[in-house]
Image (cartoon, rainbow, N blue to C red; front, side, top):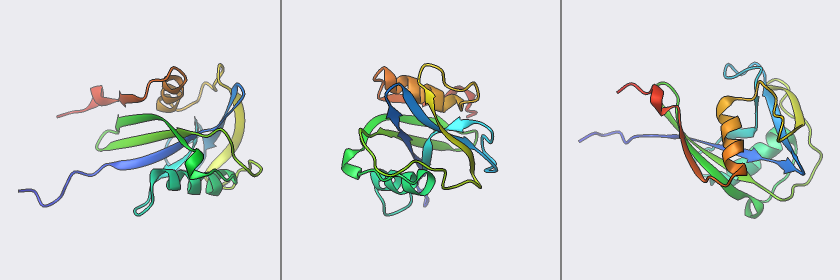
Length: 150
């Protein structure tokens, strides 16, 4: 019997929408998708719920406060990443407090609102897909599995 159980890396994302616009952040000097737009997001840490992780990330990255009870699950994505798997949890919220500001300039060189109908060309592919699936009410997706080598 195997001694190690299979492990997944959970990530949380904030789909912060105001009217017809969504808040996106451009990755910078992270080593992953640099120069491309994503969402306020991060990895869940041990001992915290996914909502708690997103509350923490929203404040750390964008300086805003969101209430865990106000975060609504919008989409879950199971993603193949070449040599490992990830599960991504996307949440929305109807309200937040504080002024949006880039609090991680060493990892993000732009934090701005973009029209949902005209996302930047350099939006990360799976983020663009998740935004689209959320807008049409699709709760679950699996991406990049066609690249998996068994």
